[in-house]
Length: 198
Image (tube, rainbow, N blue to C red; front, side):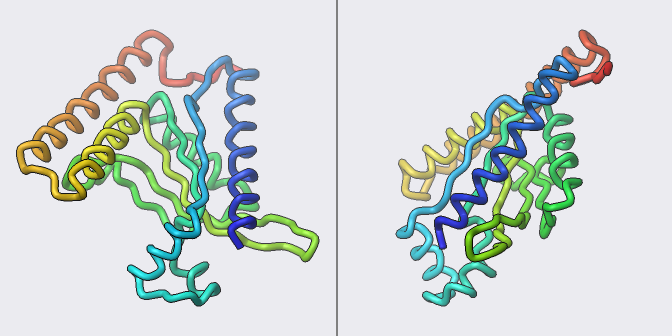
């Protein structure tokens, strides 16, 4: 089963790479800074299934755990996040199941990202399989903050001191302000983020 998810991450990575390369070639602009993919390990998947009370029922695991495989797309600007999301969602072999917009509605701790749960087909010797993946799209500043926040929570085993939580929230606000300032500078320089002249 995990092999199917691995193949699905290859498919979505190819789709994203095509968009990135097309923008670089035709529009002289790259809205995607970085693409990474991952598939949960068996241990991680079984732990999550146990926490959710799913058990070892594979069809139920497939239905109820939507982040077995995922892709993270790091973009230069917030407008690029939404642009890449729109371009992916418009592809006719992608089915959009759910969107969580933590950019417009950040989590209380300051976390920002756009999460999309999608299905896309892969084709095996035994036939077509529709595989569910989670795609996270965020800016460089959001990604930096999320990475640091994750490391801090890991170090404190989830019991982060309240003073540090307040500092993290303040850092998230600073990252959001940096995103706005950099996008404004880019717009002044180029007439809009990723202005397409072709």
